[in-house]
Picture 1 (cartoon, rainbow, N blue to C red):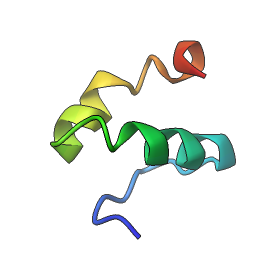
Picture 2 (cartoon, rainbow, N blue to C red):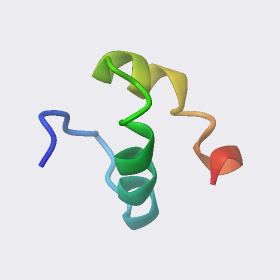
Picture 3 (cartoon, rainbow, N blue to C red):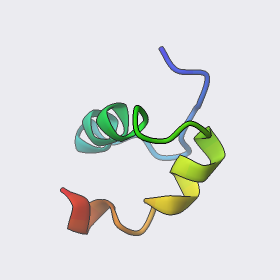
Picture 4 (cartoon, rainbow, N blue to C red):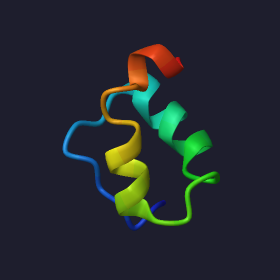
Length: 42
């Protein structure tokens, strides 16, 4: 359980952000850095 609640939760997105969240210390920064790069990152 993370204190961050994404507006759109997809099965692949949850797995992705769960892995990426460890790299980013700030939730806001994580959400702003990769919202449009999700497709390319996967």
